Image (cartoon, rainbow, N blue to C red; front, side, top):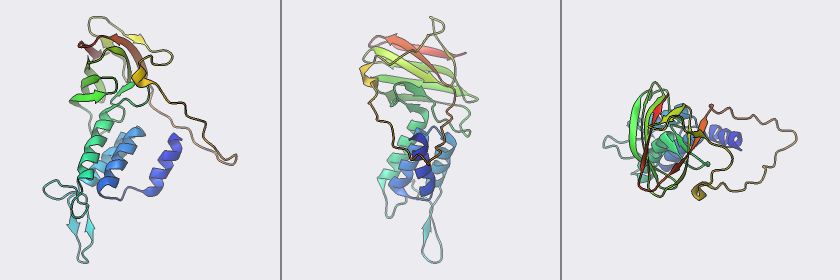
Length: 213
């Protein structure tokens, strides 16, 4: 289904405006393709041009309003949501840090992003790798942390690697039936990056600090 969704996006193409462009940024981020999501952000921020026939191209007016004539806030909000989706996801059973980081952002930081279950995160990275991560637990409960990089928990060393289902009820996964696939189809399987998952028991009101190894 992952590859089927990707094929649909490729068939639809990148050319769009407004809410459609915002959705595409989010979906390419959800497909863990940060470079494609970044390309769509660049398309969205391309200044509007009008040719001699009156046809308009580009995605943003000079005041940074989204250029879906006359204006569509969905594009601004959607693109912003897509950037957050590139930096943090928590829909698939774990808190995934930097799931779709593009090559254009080799170093940077974010703060104040919220994950399911009442976890507030701040992170720094360099050369595409997490160097520092802070997780504030508002509700307590199990924190399943997913990263492409190995981390250590400040003051405790290497955290316990996750096994089995996430016991946090906010991360309960739905039962999804197997897709119907034609016997003539030869579907490709996605090749995600290698991730490590950690389980940390958290207490409400406490902040947990992690460092890159």
